[in-house]
Image 1: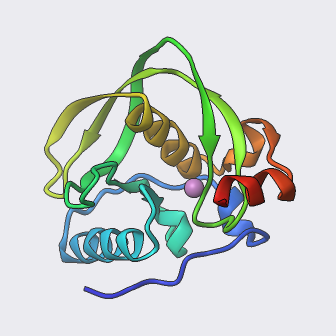
Image 2: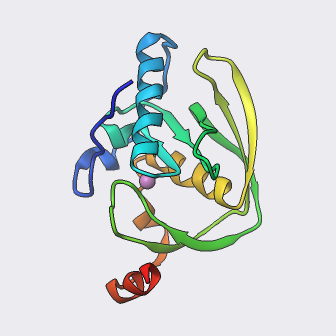
Length: 161
Ligand code: CO
């Protein structure tokens, strides 16, 4: 496994739509392994392939407290959602920036695993938020386009106190 470089704000790759994965090969497995390592290293709860410069529909998420429950989503699609939550949201491609975003409180996703097998997974609260945020990345949408407002530097300072 290896750490990959995380693409930052201003790189136009973050605004591009990703293509579906069609080959479930060793190259995909390496990408998934590297993305999980990169996400954990950066202390994030999710990472999408365009954030490491790959325009493919691949996402890793880990909302567990111990950061040891990686979800791998290949070609994910939101097939149901309900409710609403409003909360703080950030992104590894926008370090130090935070916004308040409304998201559904429940999200159901259909995806494939690393071997191409289809499965469904449900998430609530933080996991639902992560599904929405990461799948947006695959469509070239970043969280700043979804926020009600961004926090001011003063608010971020107070948050860190
Ligand atoms: Co992000």
